[in-house]
Amino acid sequence: MPERKVVVASSVGLHARPAALFSQAAAQLGHPVTLEKSDGKRVNAASILGVLSLGIAHGEEVVLRADGDGADAALDSLAALLESDLDQA
Image (cartoon, rainbow, N blue to C red; front, side, top):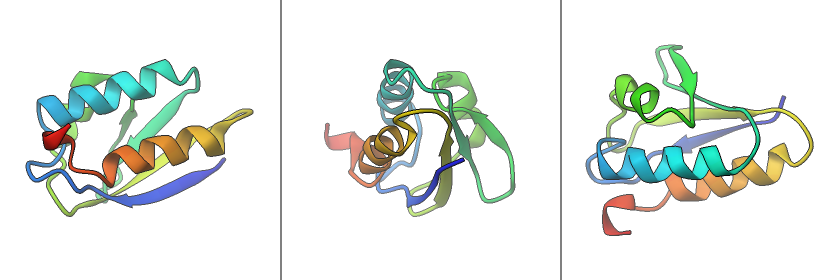
């Protein structure tokens, strides 16, 4: 199962607007993607409530995982989102 370690760039972390943009992008990919915090808690990346429940802060490293054909491209696109400041989007 492919994975990507990513440092969250959004100045407020994955809260409100950044979490919504991220989870919407994950839902549109057509691949099951998980988002995991450093404490091991893992959620469905397409779930806004799941993403918010992790309380991910600016500068925190997370792990994205996906499975299936095209999983690498899906992870690359989501990693690029997290590495940008979604507060400015």
